[in-house]
Picture 1 (tube, rainbow, N blue to C red):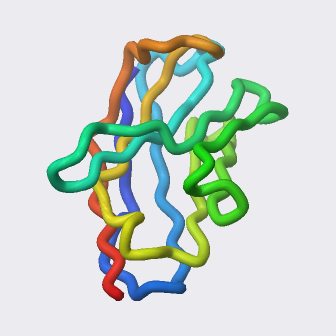
Picture 2: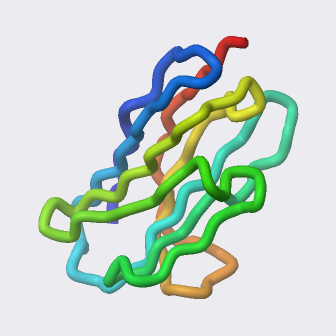
Amino acid sequence: VQLQASGGGLVQAGDSLRISCTASGRTSSSYAMAWFRQAPGKEREFVAVISWSGGISSYADSVKGRFTISRDNAKNTVYLQMNSLKAEDTAVYYCAAGPWGTRSYRYWGQGTLVTVSS
């Protein structure tokens, strides 16, 4: 499975942005999809995950209520809608695919940079 993230950019605090991740290759596998992020000088952290069906999702406390993860399996794409962005949301955002509940995602995208100016 190959993952391609896109949609990052420079926005102002309070703005919204949607980033996407499109899968190719062995997309018939019923993988959960997740977003992680890594800010400069910090470790990569979990942001959100969604089940294959889209019926179950989970979020980090830091983004709960502001970010929404969704997926369109017909397009092999997962989205992260980010609202009320804060400067501390600035990071490279990575998508990942793996079995639901995994602690070690097997497939990773290359990342897309989101910069939020205050």
